[in-house]
Image 1: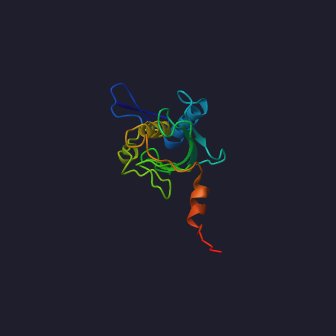
Image 2 (image 1 turned 45 degrees about the vertical axis):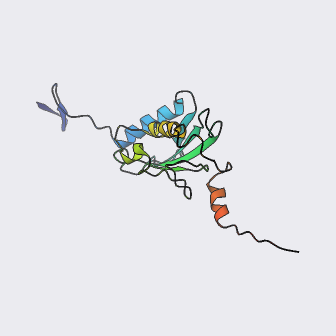
Image 3 (image 1 turned 180 degrees about the vertical axis):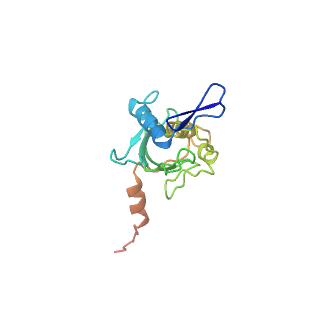
Length: 170
């Protein structure tokens, strides 16, 4: 049974279907949670630009898990939430150089086809879920011992592409 009140249909007891939280409310919830800190403090995230009214560009940080080659390393990521977020996953890209099976070595992009959380995205997933899942992925047998590039960010990755080495014999 629906009741009309001020032009809005309001469900009474027994109405079915989940309540869909609008995108901006969802992102505000995530921002508040990210600002408070998550768990043990080894994963964090927040907005890139407080003036971005569309709340699209975010920065995440993961501190590498213990007993892995990632231990103590600080990884910076960019998360881009397009207008269809949270119905579609954000684009996630490591800015810090990293060697992981689900990350494109040239671009730092987390490949949805190789990272199940993005590949099988569900609306209930959050940016926090993505970051904690990536941290867990660092501890998996296929990633925990992979050789890691020297610490650096995307700028160094791009610069290295343009470097040419010459040998001079005297």
